[in-house]
Amino acid sequence: GNSVTQMEGPVTLSEEAFLTINCTYTATGYPSLFWYVQYPGEGLQLLLKATKADDKGSNKGFEATYRKETTSFHLEKGSVQVSDSAVYFCALSEGNTPLVFGKGTRLSVIA
Amino acid sequence: EAGVAQSPRYKIIEKRQSVAFWCNPISGHATLYWYQQILGQGPKLLIQFQNNGVVDDSQLPKDRFSAERLKGVDSTLKIQPAKLEDSAVYLCASNPGPATYEQYFGPGTRLTVT
Image (cartoon, rainbow over all chains, first blue to last red; front, side, top):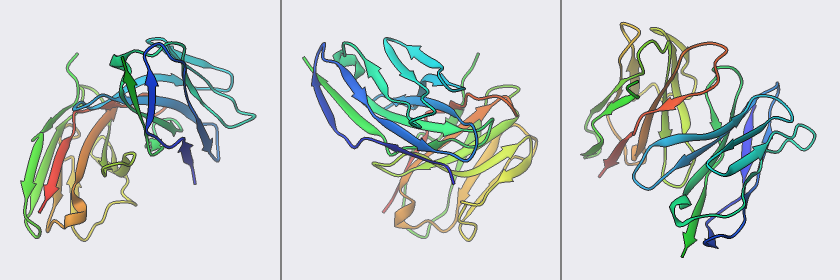
């Protein structure tokens, strides 16, 4: 079955540092890939998505590129802010099938 | 556009009691999902509805969990009787239907079973 593996946290960075959160996936078909973010006390929000190979999703300074050859969708941001502190989930689905999530990576950004 | 609504936001019950959660999806969204998110883990699907029909309930513990979406709009998820391991956040999500990608999540209901 489909699965998602993302790097274990927590990740602690200083403000303005570069962020990478690794995500790899296993899928039987051609999934769409997502990054969701969960801020403290809030629900899941879609951060960005990519629906086919080589697509780049971007939002709020975050980027991730759908790499079919390495089955990866790593999340990057060039300069993190304290307000980026949250839990980040990598996920996949095929069409409107249920999302399959990774375990989440907690990011803490310190000033 | 109103988002996905869920209630209650928090619930504390004792084991062996019953509890029900309610979800109102975004208007016009045909597909509705219930996910369970245990602390420190990613959400996992419990059940998926397409309109008022069940598409996937393979991960739903049917001896204690039940869900319905009678008119193809609102949905309720019930646990009876609750166990300690049911402590989790229960998330409802919706999307417009087949061939659409994005799911919109509600704020969740945090259940604590003591």
